[in-house]
Length: 87
Image 1: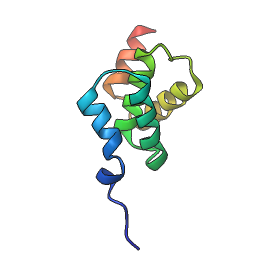
Image 2: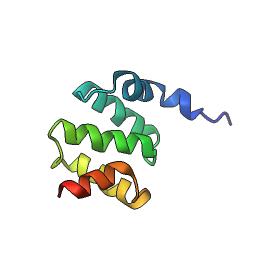
Image 3: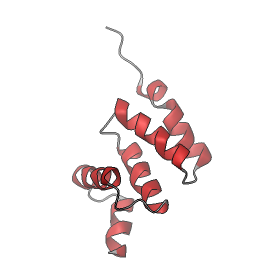
């Protein structure tokens, strides 16, 4: 009946991504909360992949799942290209 505004629902997650803009487990946990609300949010998936990689969690199942989902949804994303160049 009353749809939830994406910006309001993802506000805390977006704050941690833009204002903090540094990899930490706190930011990663906020990104996970945002992905629970909108599992197809490309900005959240990019942050999940980027921060997981920066924290050394690139072999984590959640990070790999986020990478694969991002790869299927936005294969020309900058983060995808950067990770492919590292391999």
